Amino acid sequence: MTGRDVAIVGAALSDCGRVDAATPFTLHHQAAARALADAGLRHTDVDGFGSTGTGVLAPVEVAEYLGLRPTWVDSTGVGGSTWEVMVEHAVDAIRAGTATTVLLVYGSTARADLKRRLRTANLSLSSRGPSQFEVPWGHTLIAKYAMTARRHMHEFGTTIEQLANIAVDTRYNAGLNPEAMYQDPITVEEVGAASMIATPFTKLHCCIRSDGGGAVVLTSADRAKDLARPPVRVLGTGSVSNVTTFSEWEDFTVSPAAVSGRLAFERAGLTAADIDVCQFYDSFTSTVLLTFEALGFCGRGEAGAYLEGGTMRVGGRMPTNTDGGGLSACHPGMRGMFLLVEAVRQLRGEAKGRQVDGARTACVNGTGGWFSSASTVLLGVD
Image 1 (tube, helix red, strand yellow):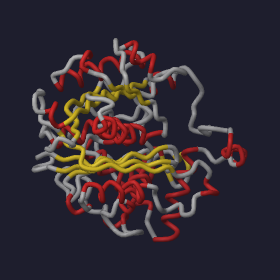
Image 2 (tube, rainbow, N blue to C red):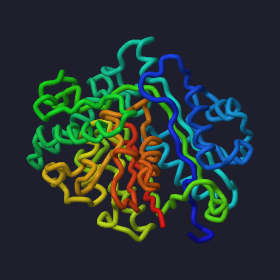
Image 3 (spheres, rainbow, N blue to C red):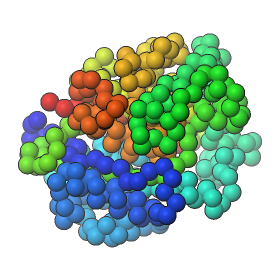
Image 4 (cartoon, rainbow, N blue to C red):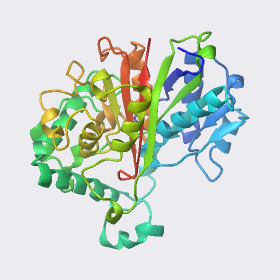
């Protein structure tokens, strides 16, 4: 590591899954305290802080709850890719000297909240601004992802069974993770027979709803030398904003990760062939499909075939979402934080029962909204 390098030196999850007694603040605190302890740091060492918070003054109220008074703050909100974007911001801040130790933390009781309000599957995230012109026609978040799947099937001959295979392999990995919310194996046939949500997606093509939180701590290479855990270097990052309105998206079959990934790989001096393990946002099976193509792991229109034969499984040719992903392990709302924690565990050799042998590099990709944003982070160990 050089003096300009930045590394993740702490990573941890809060209690996850079914945590009915917790509040979002509780989960923020658990995750932050565990990540700082993992790094061998105290809250007084933190001068940079990023969180989406739980109210209007995010992240100020969360920082106050954690006993922090940071001099650098980030409250970026771009959906599921938020935490990868914040990593990019934190790296820039540490290199510029405006922060020395940055804590990024997330906590959500999405599952518990579901009990206290109406189902949201048939609602749109927004009815203001440009979105107002599509909302009356029923373009919900789930329907938009389903449209990307249907378009890919139409253009490239991708089958629903190939999409279902993504859910099956992800559940296989969840079966290796005792902390995963759903661990029982599923088959392609069972995915197809599940309740229809938004054609062609059945329930098992969609992410689960859980409670949970996580946190990571970043600092400079020089500071990392004195800390408790092996540093996981940030090799390259890239972020991009896409659209919220489907009529403004030029091609439903191209994830914005094509841009964020190109930037991250160029800045790291790597290609997809250099990656040992992947952690991709998997709100729906089509999210994973398009991400593999966008990041260059296979050609356009080829992901369905590429992912056959257990590609994503631990022990497969490109282990992906090794904790069981948002499809089976946990998904409290913005899962990008969990991608980072799992990548760190894999690169430090701490993913018990699901460890990818010899993992030295990881590709993390978050997707926000309905392919409205993307951010790619490449990580590695010496």
